[in-house]
Image 1: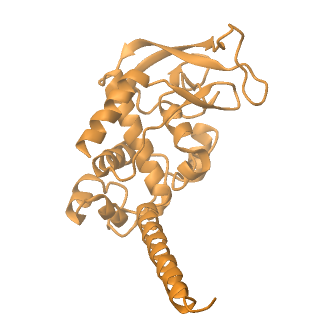
Image 2: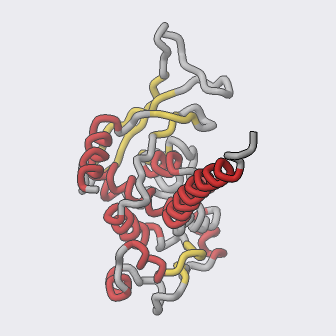
Image 3: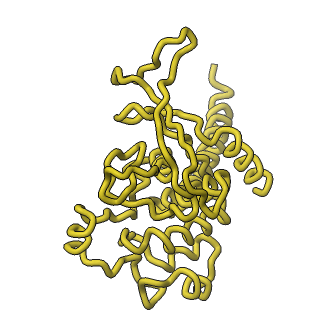
Length: 255
């Protein structure tokens, strides 16, 4: 696991903006190097989620005590993550009324319980890394993969303040590259206006961990499901061999 983390950090440092799938506005998504078996990453993502996202966004389908699956004790959850509830068995709800939230932000912040299943890990990772300063917006912020987003950049103290421009992606023959919808593909180019408390690599890891936690939260039992599925396939494979041997034994005297 430690070696895997080292490899992930190295990839983030070298390929932090490697594009993969195109989104509707022609900006390519960054690949999210997630691993829902990495408990250290999930714990870090849970901390970031509770400290920064849970102020406005709820996760009503998730209970705090489910965080014990991440290797946390009930005492650790109470002391470090339980800020909007009184009991560990409660759901991750917020105190902000939806009506007031809509009045303040123009739209009520969505529940994030299954946001990773709705948007995808690559979209979330790109979104968290896609904020930039835009004085034309009411909040002063905009986003590359969610143009005219109503949410401000809540992690700006970590990442810093960035400016943004677009660069047309060209093919090997020098022609503009187009996506499946015929849109010209553009690559995001950021420049730091005001540094944050984290380096670019550190913030990429923070965004990775938060995305990792959101993916896990969308289906907390996915690891167990995969393990059970693997065991079932192994049993079926053994049964197939035994069935074939049994059939051969029954039919060995038949010509």
